[in-house]
Amino acid sequence: MPTPVTDRLRAGFADRRVLGRLGAWEGMVNRLVEGWPPDGWYPATYYREDLGTRDELADVADAELVPALAEVDRRFREATVDDGGQALAAATGRPVPGDRWWWRRIPRPLPWEGPRRVSQSLRPTPPY
Image 1 (tube, helix red, strand yellow):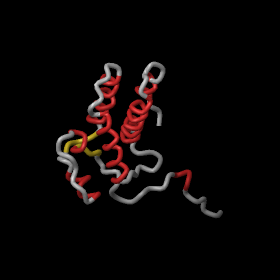
Image 2 (cartoon, rainbow, N blue to C red):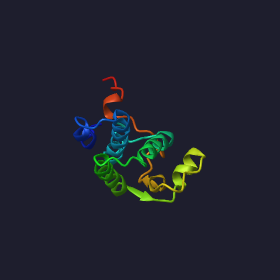
Image 3 (cartoon, rainbow, N blue to C red):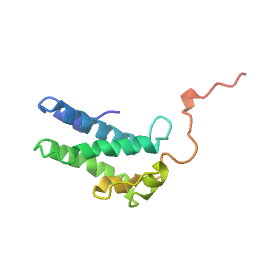
Image 4 (tube, rainbow, N blue to C red):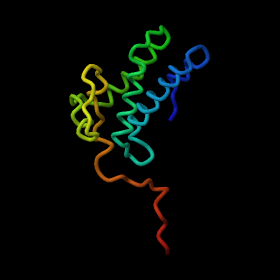
């Protein structure tokens, strides 16, 4: 997944670890916005891990990072709804932290529910 917000910071941002976390968060948000390519499915455990990545960025106060993170967060908020963390907790069997807003937000439809669709290019060709 492209990460244009993160890429803009690559040249001058010193902390590569933090930049990597931003890139991971932005990549997940982009997958969410694009409908979870290639098959429209994304496990709840992966989603939970991605929210943990966002946790790692919560206390970074770098002047360059803050606006970039705000841009990615805005896209995340626009693509999700607040359900209080109920759907993710139910799917993973673990409560979500209540003190971080991103843990309470989920995409609709839930990418971990329903049948996993196989992309058209991976479907076997019927013999003719």
